[in-house]
Length: 239
Length: 239
Image (cartoon, rainbow over all chains, first blue to last red; front, side, top):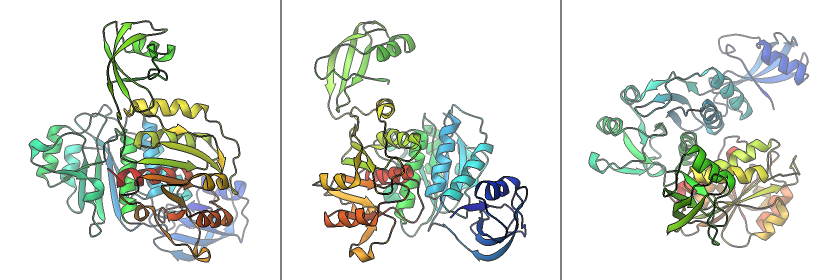
């Protein structure tokens, strides 16, 4: 079953945009009277019937609303330092959407080589990835933010910061992310640093703010791989 | 630290091939007397000294051998049906190498849309991924094989086949892969089917041969994503 996406269906919009309309009518050959499924990006799937098969602006009526379609039993916020190559962050965003992520925040740290972040392409990839993996909710892509500001901005839930370095001098234990996750805490934030990792000062601040330092094992993972392994760890914990 | 790769260092070869030599001398500007690290693809890292800084064929002497460099505490064989787009399988092979995989076998099943598999490009990606993630052992890429032949060929260890369908009529339980994994069984084989999943007959054969049917949760994952989530599950279990 093919899913279509409408940004304004929840607020009463009953027409698909030109891109979705053309795909539905020209590519998939749907006609007036056909039933199609539309997601609102906020968690609802709408079963609809086509009233006007216009490839420039398909009009439909809503027959049924399914809430929490393709949802997952946790809330995951992944804060990740964008690699130099934008495609690697885009790839992470698309794959994490398939697996199950709710918020994505690009991070800039003391050791970040990249200080500019363009999210426009990612929005499109997230929509197609959510449609393809049958998820009615799109992850929220936040603006890029500095590590210190992010550390201070997240208050509740399980707050985990992945760190490869030694933490002995900080008097803080580092445990595997899989051990840090627990059934009773399903509101989770995970931070993944740049290639140069987080700085000692950033980790010290995280500890002082009550963040749990975690490890993702011994393998030397690239940023986007570490981010996807962490996303998988949270997903697998609650499946 | 940059790693170099030599296919024949273990058998006494003391010269890098032209590509590795040029990269070492022309790009990284190494000179005679410099120390470099070379992996043999079989698990050993060799600390070496450059004797002749020839960009066409760098000659070196071995100072020290480190066994099991970048190894992981399990043996994982991932058997995965190649998606239509070859890049998605290549991407899986490269990422799985980063995380930790020992053998990769392309599968053709009853519902496979793709029956041809070219591995040449993957070999190169695996080498660069292993060097980049500091692993001295390269995963073994097997020739493509049919699902039934593969099911019969794997004898020992934990044998898990991921299946989205219902298994009630087979009298076989389906459990999450994370529950199926246990500390005492670290020799693991995981099968991931094509977009159309495994056929009922293939699953019935798997059950009759003692394979455990497992699930990767509710998310609708593409082949390469499911394969990487499964690889992450095994990796995270033993870190």
